[in-house]
Amino acid sequence: MELWFSEQHSDTAKFSMKIKEHLCSKKSEYQKIDVLDTYDFGRILVLDGVLMITEKDEFVYHEMVTHIPMAVNPKIEKVLLIGAGDGGTVSQLIKYKSIKEITMIEIDEEVVNKCIEYFPNLTQGFKDERVTIKFEDGLKAVRKINNYYDLIIVDSTDPFGPGEGLFAKEFYGNCYNALNENGILINQHESPFYNQYKDMVTKMHQRISNFFEISQVYQAHIPTYPSGHWLFGFASKKFKGDVIDDSWKNFKIECKYYNEDLHKGAFALPNYVKELIK
Image (cartoon, rainbow, N blue to C red; front, side):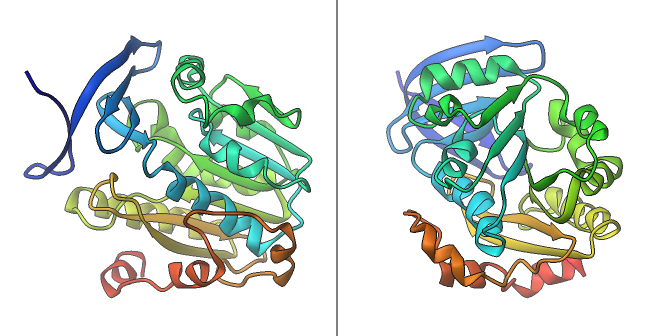
């Protein structure tokens, strides 16, 4: 008997992959957690039936939320992560010896536990002495912070369930307050391709633009995410996202996806995306 995992990308389109083995199924306080081993994409993490990461293409997402802001402002020292329980973003950030502290706020401890168990290569960064993990609601936690962080990365699930509040207007305002004068906010911005996501893309950009002096959108190709065309938000109090600081080269970071030419090109958006965020 063949076992397949399918994720509904729209009412009439879905993405499927053949499964070798169902490694884990766990119901936490917040969501259902599944880990499956696939033929083409390696191990995959699924939350409430929605694909979060695959071993095959996770590097695209994690490099693009990390190296874009670091190349814009290589002087970043204090980083706050909201979500990021799979460890992929942390694994990229710890490549920078100049970063002094990385605080990760994840609401679901069981996600971290399962990722440590089943994705050991991704979660090695949790052992870094600069990393502090707090298991609490990121929406509430960020309210208490003022004028402190250089960078906030919202590495969240889609806008429903535990991650719903991380797409609210109040949350973006609190992120603005939590950042210092050089602060940068990065968030996953959903896909512009299917109709069911378009309104969220527009609303997110509008809400962030209401607070930040600079608000831009950039893109990447992530094969296993809906449509493969995925957007990210870049917001800042002073930096433009498509302007790279020449000193970033001194880090000599090795990447599988990100490079400086791609960085600049990622901010060159198709017309249909420009219309959504106009």
